Image (cartoon, rainbow, N blue to C red):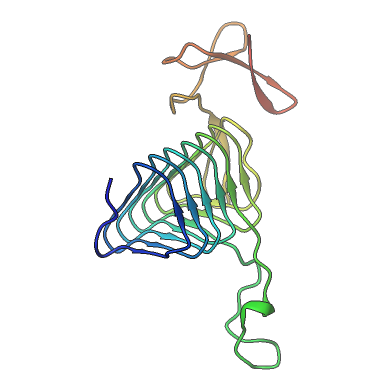
Length: 195
């Protein structure tokens, strides 16, 4: 798949096979983009960011370094993965801040997780496998695998399965993915598959 003419992909970026980078997207120095990934119009992938295979970064998603996205991650339109807990344009002495004047913290979004449109993930947050962050949420802490979170600040609203559908409780107190038929139980506040 092509890299559109108006996209800005740095020569040091590692781009996998079947990657499509749409108009006006920017992929910075030393970023890694896995096979089969799509980067939407106007999206930004920062210096050294790792994007797994088969991901979708929708239009105008902003993924700042040193974020790490696992395989199959969805980042919705206009979502922001931030990296600076103490943002300032100038130092305490009044001089312009440079690269050595701040410490970036990564956001990690693990395999199969989804981040909805306009959501903001603050620095240092880890979103667990197959979790789902609702549109417009502000995530200030880690998100457990399979958790559905939303709001400002985000809080757990329920559980979702691999299908992306909300899990439904059954008569035994377990949760069932109505599409895949996988069964889960809650142990110590975390979802575990029943095998």
